[in-house]
Amino acid sequence: MKVLVVEDERYIREYIGTFLQSYGYEAVLCDDAESAWKYCQEEMFPLVILDLILPGISGLDLCRRIRQLDHGDDFYILVNTSQTNQEDISDVFEAGADDYCAKPFDLKQTKTRLLVAQRNILARQERRENENIMRYQVTHDSLTGLSNRHAFYEYLGNTLAHAQRYDRRGGVVYIDLDNFKVINDSFGHGAGDDVLVETAQRLREAVREADLVSRLGGDEFALVITELADERDIFIVQEKIQQVFAKPYSINGVCYYLSGSIGLATFPDNGVSADQLVHKADSCMYEMKKKKKKVFSVSTQ
Image (tube, rainbow, N blue to C red):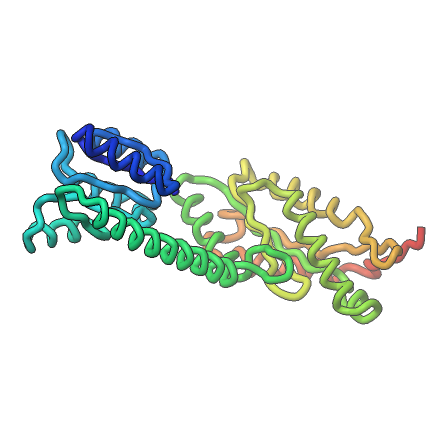
């Protein structure tokens, strides 16, 4: 584990560094808060051991700055202080410190506080990981790994807000696989799932990284297209999606060709809200589906 040590007294700083290294920690040593602040802005330290009395920025001010970083809550801050009356300790915790260690430096006390810090850091990391897993499950489709309906609407809303603010264009694409039920009925839902997973991967590869590909449910997909130069660019996206279905799907050694009905809507031409664009794209998709005849074919070659 990497530890940032901020201590202006050289003897104490180097002693703490040697002590940490003897227990397998990687110590980064700073003699002032300014240097430590630069480190904290560039990388994350699971543990910061911080002296309160420092030249320039005080330890309390550095502690407050760290907590204001986007990842500030991920630092565990252990303060070294000789000021141990109740009021001073209250100031330490109010500034955002997790724990304190009283000076003068005591080997046994420091070892104990490090063990406490390590347990708390591991518990915090485990909690973060569980939160990330839960967040992912809430926003992603379990089969394809694509964003789900909730994430689609959230991303679309953010994209439209950005487009309105900076006078940009955006688009929504709805896709529904044609006669997908035939695959499930003929080969089982496992084969159908394989087709959905492959379709998801093909759609990801067909658009830019800034564009969002979502599975709304069943065999229905939706895309949020960002930064369109003009209203004609959406048709370039349509052509790329049509190419997605030009390649056959291989199921049990047999090639199957699927097509998809595609509906398009652009901001601000077809609407200025998420509901308006979704309704337009959805309507266009179903109009295309109605006009189609037989769109599912089989090749044994």
